[in-house]
Length: 361
Image 1: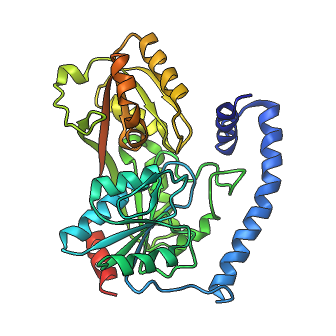
Image 2: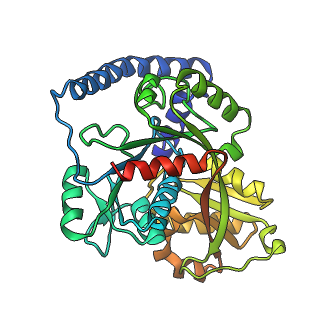
């Protein structure tokens, strides 16, 4: 069984979508591991709460954008939105990130992951990649004028004290089957959501009834924590070399092949369908996939077999696939990079006020 096939099957088990005896047996085996994982998380969190393990201030206000599940919650567009709010207020934010599967070098000297490159390019702010956020913050203060830190994917990074915890939840798959890793998708038991300062219930535009149920659950169980609902919108198309594409309605309606390597590929596909873009073929690679020459050859072959010439991808994929732009040109495949942004419904001004309050802490 190929690695990607195993990954997909385990993901189905973690979301109770693997039928039959085999799925039940694998789920039972993972359940045993989940018990030990859960106990370990509870113990570590208790040690931080009792100051047995120390937590540190970073010398500037810290706004944390995190989640309680693995997989794509749409956290990166939320980071972009928060940084934009801070910049609009005349502040100098710096992003601190772990940099999962870091690969490329930034102008600031950090080794960046695909998400970090995306953030650096789209926001024009320093992005510091370091598993040790305290060390990364110290580097940022030495090298840049910093007013506030935005800590990407830090809800479980208890070593750093923060002034606001914004937890992003995927409306389309809020908590999986309710189990912690590896039996489910939860990084912590659901009770950990009580630490949040704000909830952003994301992807409401593609969630249907699941989003409504998640909102009801959060309002009932964590009524003291404010919540806003958010969705995505497509605001721009570019080619792989960063040039704006002016696509007519007729051009957008033409069938296209779609490739992505994100945590929640289905939400991307559904967003394209919502725009009435005809998806002639779809290939999702593992999140943070590093594309090889062979992968690109395979993609080109799939595009040709589907009978189309246009290939849609996310910005996150484009930062890794742009080095292959000549290969796509030689195959006469038109690459179209889709740029999305988050839009917050009722409660946006209250959230902005809370962000501003955190910055003055």
